[in-house]
Length: 250
Image 1: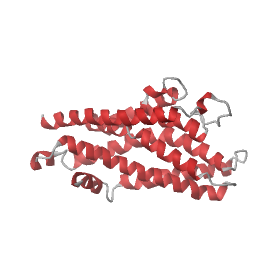
Image 2 (image 1 turned 45 degrees about the vertical axis):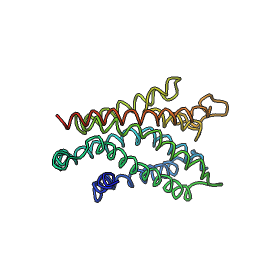
Image 3 (image 1 turned 180 degrees about the vertical axis):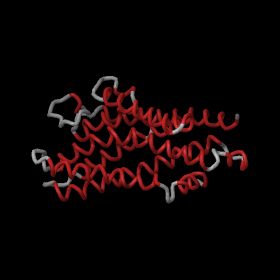
Image 4 (image 1 turned 90 degrees about the vertical axis):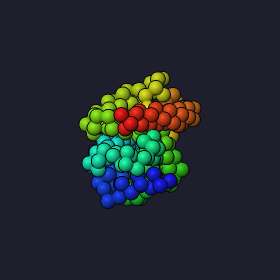
């Protein structure tokens, strides 16, 4: 727990922590502005969810994870590039796991900020009953199935820096958009959140609202996506942790 606490403290008073709040606020505000500027858009809660839950998993989750990982790696490099591991005889693998856990906690906070931001912005522009369950499910599922991106992006950032991390994130975003509506969606981690929003929110990966009867509304993909994401998160965290340990030892 001390290792995790140490990682959490590294984010204190940093630009990264501000982004955790600013980015979800931006997405909620963006959806509000778009609906005000385009009167033909639905003024229902479903309308705002289709907007937010298309852009959030499509753009923020891949690019946001890449940016956070890159900034975390840059911060470590500036602080001595993990030299404390040698001085205090700290397990590199434990440090890696704590770093992944710290990013997971901060991304959860960002998901919760998104949830409350949607509600607040929706009160100004939406009519009808607030779909609390659907929104919180969308936020939490997006967060859970995207956790696997953390060790991937941390590895990219630790290996080659923030530009490489962002390059991997951008390539993943493109691959995710292409794979999400396809039968092989489960092979591309960047597509999982986008694909699972189809049955949960009813939004197509291209941003349009799905009509009743569309095969993308099949909810059987939800447990599959969650199970695959959790298993792969454990595997990739372990493998990248071994890589990090070997790098620091040598």
